[in-house]
Image 1 (cartoon, rainbow, N blue to C red):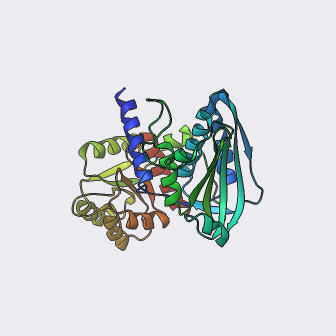
Image 2 (cartoon, rainbow, N blue to C red):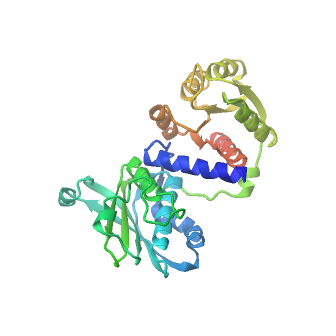
Image 3 (cartoon, rainbow, N blue to C red):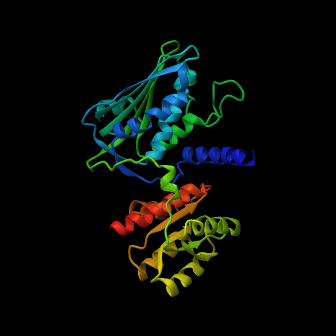
Length: 332
C-alpha cells in the first residue's frame, strides 16, 4: 500500500511537471505509425470492452523528433478521455497524416505556426463539449467528471507535453456530436529509429563493468548500489559532484559508466560529467533527477546521447538503462 501510494504521488508530480513543461525530454526521430502500432494492444486493454478502437495509419508518414514515452502518455490520456465520454460505448478512432500548415490556418488559429507537421488525431462519438467547457479543458485540475473520478490533469498533461515538443493541439467538439483532438508535431527529415518494447529479460541482464554512482541522498545511493551489485557490477560511490570528479580522476581507466544525480552539492551532475569528459571523452552517463534545476544544459547532453531516469524509478528500469548505455558504448 505504501508503494502504491508513492507511485500515485510520483505520477501526480510527473503530470504537474509535464503541464509546466519541466519534464526532461529524450527525443528521438520516430515514426508515429510505428509508435501507435506498438502500443495499440495496451490501449485496447486500458480502454476495455466499453469502446471499440480503430486505427487508421497513413503510409509514408514523415518522421518527427519526439520522446516516445511522452507521446505514448498523450495517446493514453486522450483515449481514456474518449472512452469516458462514451458511457454507453462507441468507437475511438486514431489517425495519422502528413499536413502542411499555411498562413491562412495561422490567421484563424493564433497558436499555430506555418510548417510541415505530422498530425495525430483521436476522435470519439461521445457527449461532446460546449464552448464554455472547451475554453477550460487544458486548465490543470479542471474536470467535468464526478468527484473522485479524475484529477483534472489528463488534458493539462497533453497540452504541456505537446507544447514542450514545439507542437500544438486543436480541438473540435459540439454537444452530442463527439470530440476530435488534433495533435500537431513538427515533421523532421531524419530516419526514424526503431522503438523497442522493454522486456523483463532486458531488465535482468547484468554485467561486470565498474560504475561510478554519485547521489547525495544516502538512501537512494544505497538502493542504487544494491541494485547494481546484485546484477554483478562493481560500484564506486560518491556523495556529491566534487567527490565524484575526484574519484573519477583516480579510477578513470576502470570506470565504464557514471550514474549522476542532476542536483548535488558543490558540482551538479552535468558539471561533473563535463569535467570527467575532459579526462575521458565520450564517457557514457545516466542522469537521474526528481526535479530539473538545469534543464537547458541537461537537455543538450541528452540530445548528445546521455540517458535520463526520472526519480523515482524501479530497480528494473535502472538495470535496463545501465545495460543499454553500456551496450551502446561497446557497439559504437
